[in-house]
Length: 326
Image 1: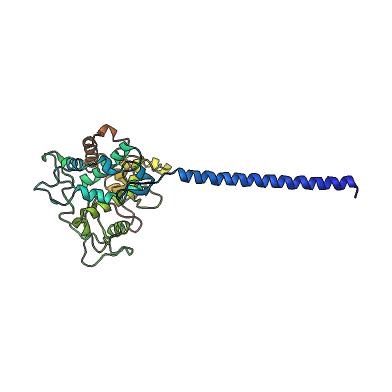
Image 2: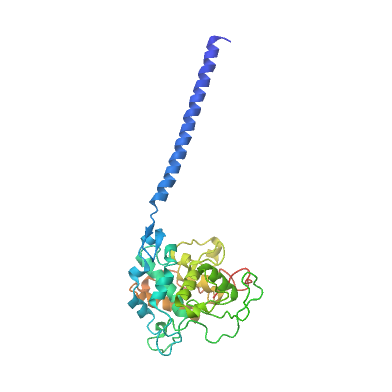
C-alpha cells in the first residue's frame, strides 16, 4: 500500500472517530438538557402545607375552604335546617363539612383555580346537596331554596335497594340500602364503592351516613371527585375545566359546566328530558348559593343545564357495568 493511501485511510478513520465522539457528546448533552428540563419542571411545581386542612399538594398553595367559607355563611345557606319541622335537626353542621373537606382539598376539591372558581365549585357542590336534602316547597318560609339539609335519609323507602346480582358488593343480610347522606347513596354496590373510597365499611354499615354528618359529607365529596367509569370525568372535572369533551360528547351535547355535573351524578334520571323541575331545582339551589356567597348568579357559568344532554351512563346498562346514579 502506498504511503499516501495509508495516510488517507488513517485520516478518514480519525475523522470518523472524532465525528462519533462529537455526535455522542451532543446526544449526551441533549439528553442531559432534557433531564434537566424535566427536573426543573418538577421543582417548579410548588407543594404547600396548610396544616390539618390541606397539605402535601399543589392545590394547598391556593386558598383553602376556611379562607372564604365561614360558619355564618354555612348558616345563611342552610338557614332552615334546624327548624322544628325539619327531619335532621341538630345533625348537619359547619365543622362536619370542613372536617370532611380536609380529605379532598389536597385533591383539588374547592382548591382548584382562582378564588372565584373555588367559590363557584363550593356552591355547585352544595347546590346538589341542598337540592337533594331539601324539604322546601313553593310557599315555604324563606322560599324552597332555604331548606337544604332538612333530611339525612330517605323517609319512606319502598324497597331495600339490594341488587343480588352484584358479586363485588353483595348485600348483607338484614341491611337496607335506601337513600342516605348529603348526596343520597342508594344500592349496595354504591355503598360498597363509596365505603372503599372513604375507607369506611358502608356495605355492612350504611347507617353511618345518617348517624355521622362528617361521614355523610365525605361520601358526597367522594362521589363529586370520583369518575364512575374509566375514561369518564368526575363532577369536579366537568365543572372546573379539567375535562375536554370528545367528539362523542359533543354529539351528545355534553359540555363543561354545571349541567354536566348533573349528568355525571344522575344521568338520564334528570338529563336529556327537557327543562323539568327535578333539574331546575338543582340549578336554583346552585344560583341561590352563588348569590348568598357574594359571587352572584351571573357567574354561574356556561352550560348550566343538561336538558338536552345524552347521559354518560344510560340507565339501560346493567349495574355491573356502571354504578347506578344516585
